[in-house]
Amino acid sequence: MNGSLWMSLAILALLSWGAVGVFQKMAVDRIGVQTALVWVAVGFMLLQPLVLPTISVLNYSSRSLICALLNGICNGLGILCLLAAMRHGGKASIVESLAALYPMFVVLLAPVLLHERLSAFHLVGVGCAVLAGVLLSAESPVSS
Image 1 (tube, rainbow, N blue to C red):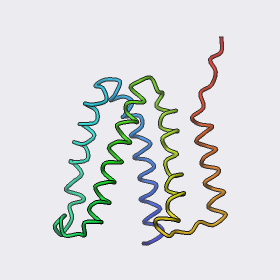
Image 2 (cartoon, rainbow, N blue to C red):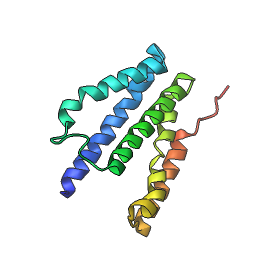
Image 3 (cartoon, helix red, strand yellow):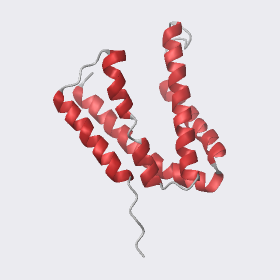
Image 4 (cartoon, rainbow, N blue to C red):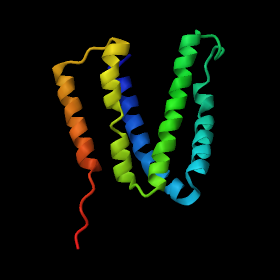
């Protein structure tokens, strides 16, 4: 894939997910976790015309469809837990920062499951990202 295209898409994902953290907190504070999750699903459905496949969605191997289904289940469970954490008193800035450490699982699993290689340079970047996540998610003590 073109280097500038994937970088532009990654930046768009970063901006979208940055905005979603604020909207998630606003939603759960107003309408609760379950109702917010329904509206998240409605939001996904509104995007369907942009992503409709040109061939039948069933014209794939069982393994591919299971991977896609597991992706949906994991995404749904993740967002449900994220919304619930915010609803039960978590600050959006802290909950989102902590949840944003999920790529560490990708980094650990990608070499084994996807046969990807990471350089030492990339691993240093991962370490910095973990440190940033820890520092961003730490609550400051309340001063009296």
